[in-house]
Image 1 (cartoon, rainbow, N blue to C red):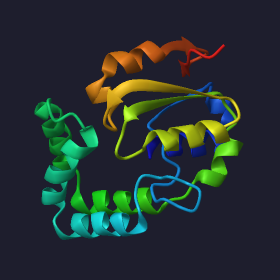
Image 2: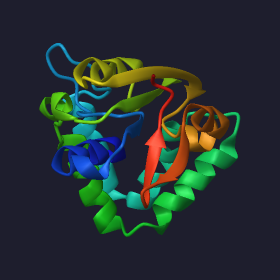
Image 3: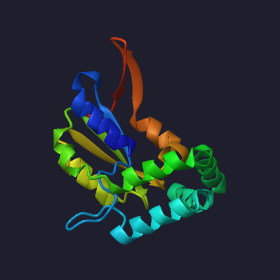
Length: 180
């Protein structure tokens, strides 16, 4: 969702952005005709009902799935702890917005170059989603990272760092991708 928030912000205030780095972007989580989002409508409804009925249980069950590295349970625990520190009511609203949003039509309007970092195995935003985002943002580059899960900042931080760097420029922090 943060990638789509960044895209919408860049559309609204393009002068504030030099570039975007979109990690596992998903303009729509729910599959649609001709579009793979990662979840069926029924799956999405079931996840939201589960979250609404037992937020802590949902957090404990879903965080390891989202992280996607069963051989590194400490990463799932880290994300679980992060979820459990969140206000459950706010988290439920955020999850509803995340699963129900459809920002596909916004992608062609992204006015800045965009680096799309896509994990090779991501149950939340499959490779098809990253490909769709790349095909619909005019100045974009898709980099498939050999990483598992939806949180490469936790599971493959070196791979994320290799693809991005930051610098100061005119008082604004810009993210510079490896694009020419």
